[in-house]
Length: 343
Ligand code: 13P
Image 1 (tube, rainbow, N blue to C red):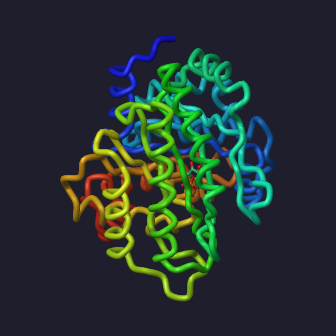
Image 2: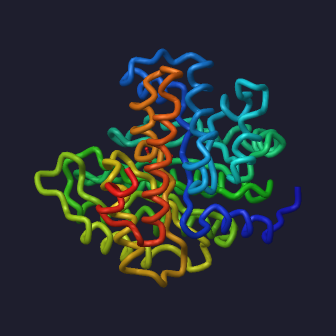
Image 3: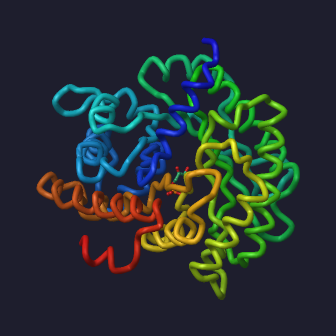
């Protein structure tokens, strides 16, 4: 298929349209099992379908959602009434997308670091996914910010893979979400996260350039610049917002339509407050700043649902609430009072 940059740019802009963001519902079978274990639900194909269908049919939540990232199983699934889940998402006014990486594997001779796999056969898979309705894709690479890491080996190898993936997507008129994630599971301070994030983004955009990826036709999904979860003293909301915007200004071309953050293990309200602080203090950035949250959108509805069909309305309300709060944060109009007023 010949690349159509107008179409890619239109899709990318729709994914980051004002006040809306992306629902990351692309947990692999292993990850969704972990989430279901926590709420005492068996991870069967039907349970996974029922849970995801309840999210996609929550009209009050979906009005704040511009796109949904799906997993291979979900993009092929049908709702209970036989409608494809892709159609359910489109009917809710959102764009379907697909996770195409095959997960992280140990990077040889690079202690604890990972390389994301999945390039073999990707060209053919993208053709199939586009046929199934995907208009964007996602590939995630991860980096460790402690004790001399990330290594250049890790940053360079993952940067090349992200760039190869992004170029293959654009060739198929699928908008690549480029997701380089500096992990927040450690005890590092915010300065270590800032240094790692800046280096990772610099190298990733260099590799995207060498691979001829058009910045107008992609979305960046980065971590925020944030203290490690196990750090003794964690930086406050303003500091996270300011350091994150500073690094993004250093690294992300103005031609990129939007930046949609991952939540990465932040609490629901933290993820909302950080995004809001960035948009409130910086209303005139060259790119839209929004959310592409997994856990920070789904933890509350998962708990409310707990596998019981009677709880579907409560789960949909919980999802709509988080989606609405993050929609406000995407325009800088959220405050802690909004949580109580809307609850
Ligand atoms: P979290 O928001 O839970 O980090 O998930 C986002 C995502 O898509 C990770 O790849």
